[in-house]
Length: 89
Image (cartoon, rainbow, N blue to C red; front, side, top):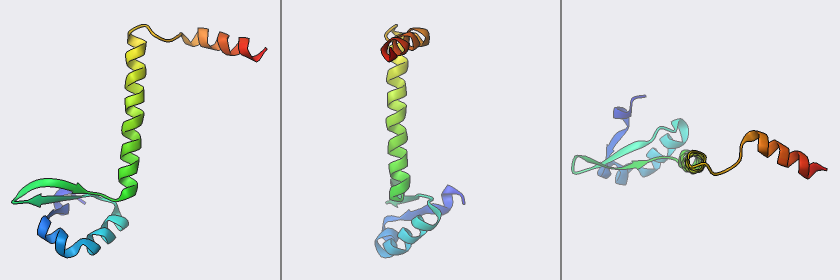
């Protein structure tokens, strides 16, 4: 299904919220809600929202790690393995 098939007005949302909730549950594709002819919000199911938020958090962690790596912080894989090996004994 194309995104253009999921564009609805805010009036449609007000009158058909239950139907839209069922559609979100069945196919998971978000709705684009318009107000005065312009896109104003996205309506998506909670599972998709939570997955997206989790992905964003993971990407932030990766970006922080990459920033540290580029600035010379941290240890090499070899040094980390040696530390692990030393801590086991």
